[in-house]
Length: 297
Image (cartoon, rainbow, N blue to C red):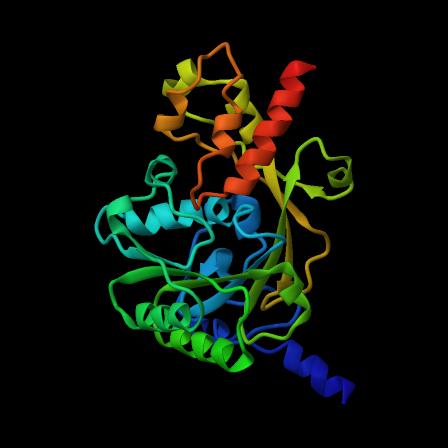
Protein backbone atom coordinates (compact mmCIF):
# COMPACT_ATOMS: atom_id res chain seq x y z
CA UNK A 1 0.00 0.00 0.00
CA UNK A 2 2.84 2.38 0.82
CA UNK A 3 4.35 1.77 -2.63
CA UNK A 4 1.05 2.51 -4.31
CA UNK A 5 0.62 5.77 -2.40
CA UNK A 6 4.15 6.83 -3.32
CA UNK A 7 3.41 6.07 -6.96
CA UNK A 8 0.28 8.20 -6.89
CA UNK A 9 2.11 11.13 -5.33
CA UNK A 10 4.82 10.91 -7.92
CA UNK A 11 2.36 10.94 -10.77
CA UNK A 12 1.85 13.83 -13.21
CA UNK A 13 0.16 17.02 -12.14
CA UNK A 14 -3.53 17.38 -12.93
CA UNK A 15 -4.52 19.53 -15.91
CA UNK A 16 -5.21 23.14 -14.92
CA UNK A 17 -8.97 22.89 -15.50
CA UNK A 18 -9.13 19.90 -13.13
CA UNK A 19 -6.62 21.12 -10.58
CA UNK A 20 -8.81 24.13 -9.81
CA UNK A 21 -11.67 21.80 -8.87
CA UNK A 22 -9.57 19.69 -6.51
CA UNK A 23 -9.08 21.01 -3.02
CA UNK A 24 -6.31 19.75 -0.78
CA UNK A 25 -7.10 20.17 2.88
CA UNK A 26 -3.77 21.82 3.69
CA UNK A 27 -4.22 24.58 1.12
CA UNK A 28 -6.71 27.37 0.58
CA UNK A 29 -9.51 26.45 -1.78
CA UNK A 30 -10.85 28.29 -4.79
CA UNK A 31 -14.13 30.10 -5.30
CA UNK A 32 -16.22 28.41 -7.98
CA UNK A 33 -16.84 31.68 -9.84
CA UNK A 34 -13.89 33.73 -8.73
CA UNK A 35 -13.66 36.38 -6.07
CA UNK A 36 -13.67 40.12 -5.46
CA UNK A 37 -10.53 41.52 -3.77
CA UNK A 38 -11.32 42.75 -0.28
CA UNK A 39 -8.97 45.71 -0.69
CA UNK A 40 -6.99 44.57 2.37
CA UNK A 41 -3.92 42.63 1.20
CA UNK A 42 -3.30 40.83 4.53
CA UNK A 43 -6.90 39.63 4.59
CA UNK A 44 -6.87 38.56 0.93
CA UNK A 45 -3.88 36.38 1.74
CA UNK A 46 -6.06 34.45 4.21
CA UNK A 47 -9.17 34.18 2.05
CA UNK A 48 -9.70 31.32 -0.42
CA UNK A 49 -9.09 32.57 -3.96
CA UNK A 50 -7.68 35.81 -2.55
CA UNK A 51 -10.88 37.74 -1.89
CA UNK A 52 -14.59 37.69 -1.12
CA UNK A 53 -16.08 34.73 -3.01
CA UNK A 54 -18.69 35.31 -5.67
CA UNK A 55 -21.67 32.98 -5.82
CA UNK A 56 -21.37 32.09 -2.13
CA UNK A 57 -22.67 33.31 1.20
CA UNK A 58 -20.15 34.96 3.54
CA UNK A 59 -21.04 35.49 7.19
CA UNK A 60 -19.59 38.45 9.10
CA UNK A 61 -20.08 37.95 12.82
CA UNK A 62 -19.61 41.16 14.79
CA UNK A 63 -19.66 41.76 18.52
CA UNK A 64 -22.25 44.46 17.92
CA UNK A 65 -24.00 45.99 14.89
CA UNK A 66 -22.05 48.65 13.06
CA UNK A 67 -18.70 47.88 14.69
CA UNK A 68 -16.66 47.78 11.48
CA UNK A 69 -18.37 45.78 8.76
CA UNK A 70 -18.90 48.70 6.39
CA UNK A 71 -15.29 49.87 6.56
CA UNK A 72 -14.19 46.28 6.07
CA UNK A 73 -16.35 45.93 2.95
CA UNK A 74 -15.96 49.47 1.59
CA UNK A 75 -13.04 48.77 -0.80
CA UNK A 76 -14.86 45.84 -2.39
CA UNK A 77 -18.10 47.82 -2.66
CA UNK A 78 -16.20 50.72 -4.20
CA UNK A 79 -14.67 48.41 -6.80
CA UNK A 80 -18.05 46.96 -7.71
CA UNK A 81 -20.16 50.12 -7.78
CA UNK A 82 -17.57 52.43 -9.35
CA UNK A 83 -16.17 49.98 -11.91
CA UNK A 84 -15.17 51.88 -15.03
CA UNK A 85 -16.76 49.52 -17.56
CA UNK A 86 -19.41 47.51 -15.74
CA UNK A 87 -20.54 49.08 -12.45
CA UNK A 88 -22.87 46.93 -10.38
CA UNK A 89 -25.46 47.72 -7.76
CA UNK A 90 -24.93 47.03 -4.07
CA UNK A 91 -28.03 46.33 -2.00
CA UNK A 92 -28.08 47.14 1.73
CA UNK A 93 -30.92 45.37 3.51
CA UNK A 94 -31.94 46.17 7.10
CA UNK A 95 -28.71 47.95 8.16
CA UNK A 96 -28.66 48.85 11.87
CA UNK A 97 -28.23 52.57 11.13
CA UNK A 98 -29.35 54.90 8.37
CA UNK A 99 -26.72 54.88 5.59
CA UNK A 100 -24.89 58.21 5.42
CA UNK A 101 -24.22 59.02 1.77
CA UNK A 102 -21.29 61.49 2.24
CA UNK A 103 -19.35 58.96 4.30
CA UNK A 104 -20.03 56.19 1.80
CA UNK A 105 -18.97 58.44 -1.08
CA UNK A 106 -15.80 59.38 0.81
CA UNK A 107 -15.00 55.67 0.94
CA UNK A 108 -15.13 55.56 -2.87
CA UNK A 109 -18.54 53.92 -3.17
CA UNK A 110 -20.76 55.15 -6.01
CA UNK A 111 -23.89 56.13 -4.09
CA UNK A 112 -26.02 56.15 -7.24
CA UNK A 113 -25.44 52.39 -7.36
CA UNK A 114 -26.52 51.80 -3.76
CA UNK A 115 -29.97 50.49 -2.91
CA UNK A 116 -31.13 50.76 0.70
CA UNK A 117 -34.07 48.56 1.72
CA UNK A 118 -35.43 49.41 5.16
CA UNK A 119 -37.27 46.26 6.22
CA UNK A 120 -36.98 43.77 9.06
CA UNK A 121 -37.40 40.07 9.77
CA UNK A 122 -39.04 37.93 7.10
CA UNK A 123 -39.34 40.91 4.75
CA UNK A 124 -35.56 41.44 4.92
CA UNK A 125 -34.97 37.79 4.08
CA UNK A 126 -37.39 37.99 1.14
CA UNK A 127 -35.70 41.15 -0.16
CA UNK A 128 -32.29 39.46 0.00
CA UNK A 129 -33.59 36.50 -1.96
CA UNK A 130 -34.94 38.77 -4.70
CA UNK A 131 -31.71 40.77 -4.85
CA UNK A 132 -29.63 37.61 -5.23
CA UNK A 133 -31.75 36.63 -8.23
CA UNK A 134 -31.12 39.95 -10.00
CA UNK A 135 -28.38 39.98 -12.65
CA UNK A 136 -27.57 43.65 -12.12
CA UNK A 137 -26.64 43.24 -8.46
CA UNK A 138 -22.97 42.86 -7.60
CA UNK A 139 -23.24 42.73 -3.81
CA UNK A 140 -25.95 41.97 -1.27
CA UNK A 141 -25.50 42.98 2.38
CA UNK A 142 -28.08 41.65 4.82
CA UNK A 143 -28.23 42.35 8.55
CA UNK A 144 -30.27 39.63 10.21
CA UNK A 145 -29.77 39.07 13.97
CA UNK A 146 -31.85 35.89 14.00
CA UNK A 147 -32.23 33.43 11.16
CA UNK A 148 -33.42 29.84 10.99
CA UNK A 149 -31.30 27.05 9.53
CA UNK A 150 -33.65 26.54 6.59
CA UNK A 151 -33.43 30.22 5.65
CA UNK A 152 -29.63 30.07 5.83
CA UNK A 153 -29.56 27.13 3.46
CA UNK A 154 -31.89 28.94 1.06
CA UNK A 155 -29.67 32.03 1.06
CA UNK A 156 -26.60 29.92 0.33
CA UNK A 157 -28.33 28.11 -2.54
CA UNK A 158 -29.54 31.39 -4.07
CA UNK A 159 -26.11 32.97 -3.68
CA UNK A 160 -24.54 29.91 -5.30
CA UNK A 161 -26.85 30.21 -8.29
CA UNK A 162 -25.93 33.87 -8.87
CA UNK A 163 -22.74 35.85 -9.41
CA UNK A 164 -22.88 38.42 -6.61
CA UNK A 165 -20.89 38.59 -3.40
CA UNK A 166 -23.35 37.98 -0.57
CA UNK A 167 -22.77 39.02 3.04
CA UNK A 168 -24.88 38.12 6.04
CA UNK A 169 -24.20 40.12 9.20
CA UNK A 170 -25.03 38.24 12.41
CA UNK A 171 -24.03 38.48 16.10
CA UNK A 172 -20.66 37.03 17.09
CA UNK A 173 -22.44 34.49 19.29
CA UNK A 174 -23.65 32.78 16.10
CA UNK A 175 -20.08 31.55 15.51
CA UNK A 176 -20.86 28.57 17.74
CA UNK A 177 -23.74 27.54 15.48
CA UNK A 178 -23.40 25.47 12.32
CA UNK A 179 -23.91 27.20 8.98
CA UNK A 180 -23.85 26.25 5.29
CA UNK A 181 -21.91 29.44 4.48
CA UNK A 182 -18.46 28.40 3.19
CA UNK A 183 -16.77 31.49 4.66
CA UNK A 184 -17.38 32.89 8.17
CA UNK A 185 -15.46 35.66 9.91
CA UNK A 186 -15.76 36.88 13.49
CA UNK A 187 -14.55 40.41 14.13
CA UNK A 188 -14.40 43.04 16.83
CA UNK A 189 -13.05 46.59 17.11
CA UNK A 190 -9.47 46.94 18.29
CA UNK A 191 -7.08 49.80 18.80
CA UNK A 192 -3.45 49.76 17.70
CA UNK A 193 -2.41 50.59 21.27
CA UNK A 194 -4.33 47.68 22.78
CA UNK A 195 -1.77 45.53 24.64
CA UNK A 196 -3.83 42.44 23.84
CA UNK A 197 -2.84 42.84 20.20
CA UNK A 198 0.89 42.64 20.79
CA UNK A 199 0.91 38.85 20.69
CA UNK A 200 -1.21 38.63 17.55
CA UNK A 201 -0.15 38.40 13.96
CA UNK A 202 -0.09 42.21 13.64
CA UNK A 203 -0.44 43.44 10.10
CA UNK A 204 -1.60 46.76 8.87
CA UNK A 205 -2.96 48.49 5.84
CA UNK A 206 -0.92 51.65 5.61
CA UNK A 207 -3.48 53.54 3.61
CA UNK A 208 -3.32 57.23 4.38
CA UNK A 209 -5.71 60.01 3.62
CA UNK A 210 -4.81 61.89 0.42
CA UNK A 211 -2.54 64.89 0.75
CA UNK A 212 -5.38 67.06 -0.49
CA UNK A 213 -7.08 66.39 2.85
CA UNK A 214 -4.15 67.81 4.84
CA UNK A 215 -5.89 71.12 5.76
CA UNK A 216 -8.68 69.23 7.50
CA UNK A 217 -6.52 66.74 9.38
CA UNK A 218 -7.51 66.87 13.01
CA UNK A 219 -6.88 64.91 16.17
CA UNK A 220 -10.29 63.37 15.55
CA UNK A 221 -9.24 62.04 12.15
CA UNK A 222 -5.94 60.78 13.58
CA UNK A 223 -7.82 58.91 16.29
CA UNK A 224 -10.20 57.36 13.79
CA UNK A 225 -7.26 56.28 11.66
CA UNK A 226 -5.87 54.24 14.53
CA UNK A 227 -9.05 52.17 14.66
CA UNK A 228 -8.77 48.59 13.55
CA UNK A 229 -10.43 45.20 13.59
CA UNK A 230 -9.39 41.93 15.14
CA UNK A 231 -10.52 39.20 12.74
CA UNK A 232 -10.84 35.47 13.22
CA UNK A 233 -11.74 33.25 10.27
CA UNK A 234 -14.14 30.80 11.88
CA UNK A 235 -14.68 28.77 8.72
CA UNK A 236 -13.03 28.68 5.33
CA UNK A 237 -12.16 26.19 2.64
CA UNK A 238 -8.64 25.56 3.86
CA UNK A 239 -6.60 24.96 7.00
CA UNK A 240 -7.59 26.56 10.29
CA UNK A 241 -6.28 30.07 10.83
CA UNK A 242 -3.29 29.89 13.18
CA UNK A 243 -3.69 33.29 14.84
CA UNK A 244 -6.18 36.15 14.56
CA UNK A 245 -5.57 38.87 12.03
CA UNK A 246 -5.44 42.54 12.91
CA UNK A 247 -6.26 45.15 10.28
CA UNK A 248 -5.88 48.89 10.53
CA UNK A 249 -8.91 50.40 8.81
CA UNK A 250 -8.51 54.18 8.51
CA UNK A 251 -11.74 56.17 8.59
CA UNK A 252 -12.32 58.92 6.07
CA UNK A 253 -14.43 61.54 7.78
CA UNK A 254 -17.05 62.77 5.34
CA UNK A 255 -16.65 66.32 3.94
CA UNK A 256 -19.74 67.55 5.74
CA UNK A 257 -18.12 66.49 9.02
CA UNK A 258 -14.74 68.00 8.10
CA UNK A 259 -16.38 71.40 7.79
CA UNK A 260 -17.40 71.31 11.46
CA UNK A 261 -13.81 71.15 12.72
CA UNK A 262 -11.11 73.72 13.04
CA UNK A 263 -7.69 72.21 12.26
CA UNK A 264 -6.39 73.21 15.68
CA UNK A 265 -9.50 72.43 17.70
CA UNK A 266 -10.83 69.04 18.80
CA UNK A 267 -13.74 70.35 20.83
CA UNK A 268 -16.13 69.19 18.13
CA UNK A 269 -14.96 65.58 18.15
CA UNK A 270 -18.07 64.47 19.98
CA UNK A 271 -20.13 65.59 16.99
CA UNK A 272 -18.78 62.63 15.05
CA UNK A 273 -20.51 60.31 17.47
CA UNK A 274 -23.82 62.07 16.94
CA UNK A 275 -24.10 61.16 13.25
CA UNK A 276 -26.63 58.36 13.05
CA UNK A 277 -25.59 56.48 9.94
CA UNK A 278 -24.71 52.96 8.83
CA UNK A 279 -20.98 53.51 8.42
CA UNK A 280 -19.81 52.03 11.72
CA UNK A 281 -21.27 54.67 13.99
CA UNK A 282 -20.34 52.80 17.17
CA UNK A 283 -16.69 52.46 16.18
CA UNK A 284 -16.49 56.11 15.13
CA UNK A 285 -17.68 57.18 18.55
CA UNK A 286 -15.21 54.94 20.37
CA UNK A 287 -12.25 56.06 18.27
CA UNK A 288 -13.18 59.72 18.60
CA UNK A 289 -13.38 59.36 22.37
CA UNK A 290 -9.91 57.81 22.46
CA UNK A 291 -8.61 60.69 20.37
CA UNK A 292 -9.98 63.27 22.80
CA UNK A 293 -8.35 61.46 25.72
CA UNK A 294 -5.01 61.31 23.91
CA UNK A 295 -5.20 64.98 22.97
CA UNK A 296 -5.98 66.02 26.54
CA UNK A 297 -2.96 64.06 27.78
